Amino acid sequence: MSKQTSESISRVKALLIAVFLLVTSSTGLADTFQFGQHIEPAYEGWHPNPDGTYSFMFGYMNENWTEQPDLPVGDNNFFSPGDADRGQPTHFLPRRNRFTFEVVVPSDWGERELVWTLNVNGVERKAYATLKADYLVDNMVIASETGSLGAGTSSPESRANLPPVLTVQGDNIRSARVGESITFLTQVEDDGLPVPRRESTNTADELRRRMMRPPSRITVGKVNGLFLSWNKYRGPGNVTFDPPMPKPWEDTRTSANSPWGPLWLPPEAPEDGLHEVTATFDAPGTYILWGRADDGGLYHDGYITVNVSE
Image 1 (cartoon, rainbow, N blue to C red):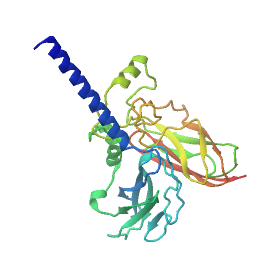
Image 2 (image 1 turned 180 degrees about the vertical axis):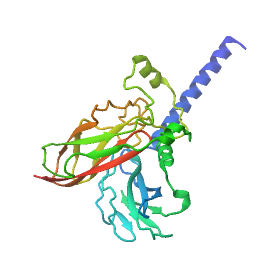
Image 3 (image 1 turned 90 degrees about the vertical axis):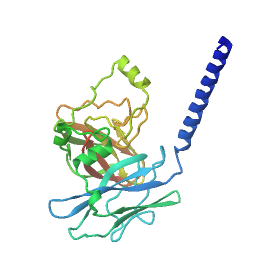
């Protein structure tokens, strides 16, 4: 083979690679949206309660990367049969949010269905909850589904893990004024499991190595490490939290402050476990704030109601 022919083949290969990368990147972009898409409600499964009742577990997939719709309980956000309001969120964070809330049903629920309906941007979707055995959820299922275990693996450590405990200090109902921040303390206790996969700092070499590593996950992957996140759950306006909270949703972008992001590091936890957070509201009304303590595998939630006046 002549040198000229070899160079021509190399140029053709390079061109084909460039075209492949362009097509695949364009295809990926075509499947992602910032605004205007619908939300898929998701039935995650059920678990029994000590008193004989059952809890249906729900989450959702917001197909938007930026738009965070607010849907009051009503024609576009309701449960059936029975009460339309079952404690579901009316504010929806971007992308996939798993095991966001639970609905307790009585011990004699039987084979009935509980249906959650969402209508967002003109598209109606439903999630159907039943007590079928295939949907039974335990701690290992939660850890696996959220990405804590990798590709379906487990260990004595992960099987021994207990959920963290979140306790809001003080009243669960607060008052505030528009533009004036309120401060609250959250106690987070944990058993230290699972052991964090990463140290709390990155060297320059480690950052470079992770940034250059090609994607290798065959399933959702999450960095194990204890964190606290506060977010708006219900309310008419915007809420700003200080310090900024890690995201409880699966933001897989490199720069994301999310345990699903490739470069995310667990934040330093206060020695006494007390986290001080301020929240500021830009509109009057009644808000519900949702706090989640997450150790990577399991979680515990808490809520604060804030009545905001002008």
